[in-house]
Amino acid sequence: MGNNESVLVQKRLSRFRPEDRPVIQGVFERLQGNVPAGAQKKTPAGNTLTFEMLQSSMCMLAPDSMVRRTYHCMCSIDFGTTAVGKDNPTPASGVCREQLVIFLADTLQGTAEERAPLIMAMTLDGACFKVVTFEQLSEFLQDLISAVIHIVVNKGLLQGWKPDKMGDGSQGVTLLAEQMCSELKSTDQGGYDVACLEDWIFRVPQVSLYLEMLVAEGLNVWLSLRPALPLLPPCKETPWKDLRRCLLDIPTLMFLAPQLPDRCNAPWRLVFSTLLHGESFTRMVAGLTKCGPTLLLIKDTKGHVFGGFASLSWEVKPQFQGDSRCFLFSVFPRLRVHTATGYNQHFMYLNQKQQTMPNGLGMGGQHSYFGLWLDSDFGHGHSRARPKCTTFGSPQLSGDEDFILDSMEVWAVGKPHEPEEVRAPNSHYLRTNKLLLQPAGCDAQFIFLLNPIFLSTHSHYRKKVGGGRNILVI
Image 1 (cartoon, rainbow, N blue to C red):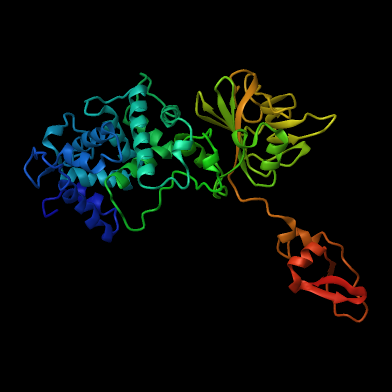
Image 2: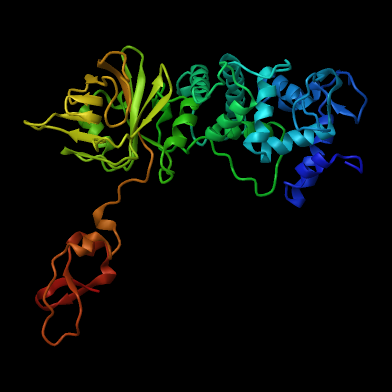
């Protein structure tokens, strides 16, 4: 950059590792080479970046509206005084080198305080105001989310998911943008200033994550030791060829995956679908038991889509189970998550073929008044909450309180249940076996009578004693 670079720019560059600083400084020259054939440079070569240059780099990964927002944001940066905030940005003059470096530093390495003015500038899209509206922020987020999805698809980051076999992505973009905007806290006058945006960015990490992915992938800024930005969990063992369309879409997946506990990092597996396995409660029970944590999605005949996350493997029994990591959620008409309130521990219930207890699957609430209930006849269920579900604080999730099932899916999202017979020798399996008395004359040893199944898979622990019995010596 030479000797004339501002102190502000030098401070921004110092955030990056020494080996990454030439990469940041080299982005300007690289983008200057992105002039479409036949297009004329509107500014002197070497001085600024034009909109056409930026568009040429990002056109395959972001809609023009998002490219324009990014360009206007860069133009608004005043590197002589503050990072962002020109009262009269002049896009026609282009983006200078210093503006680009500050933009890259604040989007890739910045704080919520530094990113808030950038979000403000992108939302205003060239206009000169100090406050934005809910609608303006929602439109900005829709552009940003759409750009991120384009990047995920075009950069091969789908992790095994098939968008053409999934739900309506455009509707999902609108719902995700609305959900993220619902976390905003306005000023007393009703709008959103930079301070409101700073608080919002701090509380909703997806805003920074999506912005970082747009810049890093859209401008091909490859930094050493840059952490991966996985937006989607891996998906395996899903019969996409036989599945016409699943209830999940990419934006909904981007929203639900971060809500799961950290230990739910195994590939997602479709273990039950009414489209594949029919409307059978028995088949559903067989699919969701002993497969670890699961995510249930239900669509009713009114078009509402909702479900629940079960933190533990389901067990068929007439008692409640699960823990406070469980939650209920809605997908349509609003994207929301409802976590445990602590009022009771009625997280999960699964029962079948009982005379005296309810038969079906339930989450939250109480018998006959669940936050989510699917009857064992499989065609009907209810979501009762007047005014809220006691366990999760959720409202009525279905279109009608007593709903009719349209379709359902169960996704296994954690490690499968480990069978007893293949556990390690020091597991509960061995501790529960019958202790034999020590034969006279033998050294002091704990000797356990073993199940033949264990012996067949752990022959190196087997030993013969009197009477031909197989025992394990610890």
